[in-house]
Length: 445
Image (cartoon, rainbow, N blue to C red; front, top):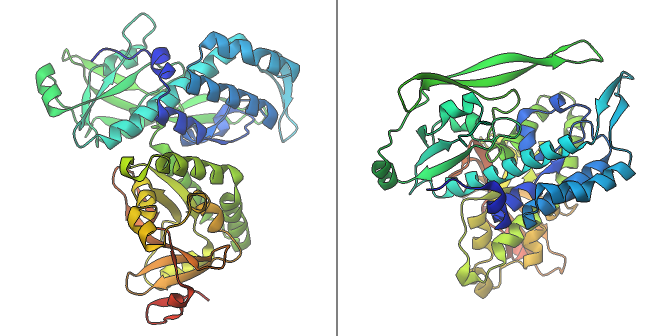
């Protein structure tokens, strides 16, 4: 397989890369080091872009780049005057939240180049990761591929050509990009291709380690900033001892981190002792217009083809964060939920199946796209499905013709997705009277 030219590949509009980039939220940061590593996969950020309008301009330009395959030069020419007009250009004195000040570099040709290349590589590789996960049954071997020229880092050159199984833990940390302007990629191989190329498969067992390194000093507080680095030690394809290191802040997989970020957010929220603060934070996540828009785009892409032409993959999207009350209700019945509720492509297609349409229980496409908003409406009620031992959300529909039922499964391991999540397995319309049968349903107080 020939090396992929990133610029050319993106002119083909890889849908997964576009979907990944558009699914990023916003996070305003005073300094790049203030962000968790995994958040780079879901939150588009630019160091020192403390104004939302500036960040919006940069993100909008990058979105157009990925969708239309624009060149680095076009990106810079379009964005430079907009940033200059808003004063985000050159060196400036920036004051942090604590009143401390420092001279920082805002926009510049070099910074725009780094922003362009870093986000292009992250989006492209995240799209490839999704595709490769979906085909990992037929292509279960992944090979690290570096661009071997004078600009290639020695560490990345050492990893070039190494093959690991798709489910090897190594990919959680070294899936490219592994540094700013990293041009490495991963290619998926079948057993037949592996044999034809004469390649052997390595295991990361006993070869992976973590190091904590100093990455700088906070000029405002004097605190030394540290970050983890993933280290792989083994032999290259020539049998020589080599060491591979990710750059600080880059030991994560951008394609796999999206749900990991949501799970991490929920895990941290559960540690907050004040129940009211936890509840307010979860409410803010569920009411986020951006998150609701992300799900709508995901669902629209899945449901746009005619029913007979739909080919759902293993992709999924967060649809809801379980509230304190519902989580307690589930625990009372012996099941501790993950509290991050996702819906898979296959479940969306099932909800809009021909069978549901024929039976008259299918939701409209608009209702399916609006599921996140429906699940936080004031009219939603929660039940325990006694037969299936799971939480069910019930929302009276706007027309008064029935109730929208969203059954779920708690703490599930979903195929092709790391970790455990809660799963919305269906969405359909039922007669209101069915919920009155107390032998089938227990209503949450």
